[in-house]
Image (cartoon, rainbow, N blue to C red; front, side, top):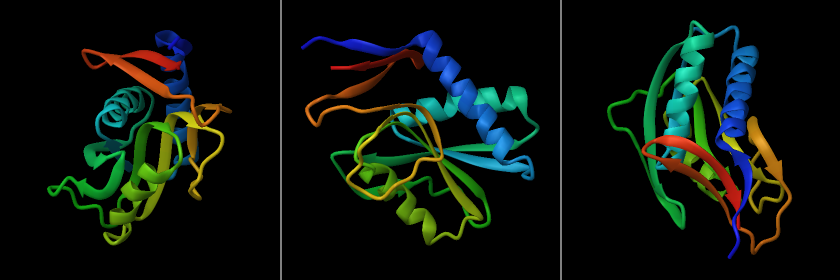
Length: 164
């Protein structure tokens, strides 16, 4: 199957930088933010967002990972060492396809009473089968059900995103 790059490494970094500025603009009243990345690629994007936000803001930033199997996301594990109560949480994933994984990542957080939950993704498919609104989106694509979108990292460095 042919791969068609939808975001080069340079464009993907530009999108992440724009997302970081949007996060800053929408949250100027905050002192801190907790970024929780959905493993694997969502966590790597969360690391990148953290770096950019540290450059452009005075936020105190915490980072954690959310573990779930995207093909069966019911068993979702949050970092046990993190207290989410009264925190401003940003959940990050690389691609939002149906919205199912992101919703399963949000669900266990609700019981921990964070102050707010926001969501971010590099690539969002324009049709979702679950009622999810992503707050910060790098690029939104209209695709067919057969299309697959991948965000690629090499040695932890964002290489871009492609459609196949």
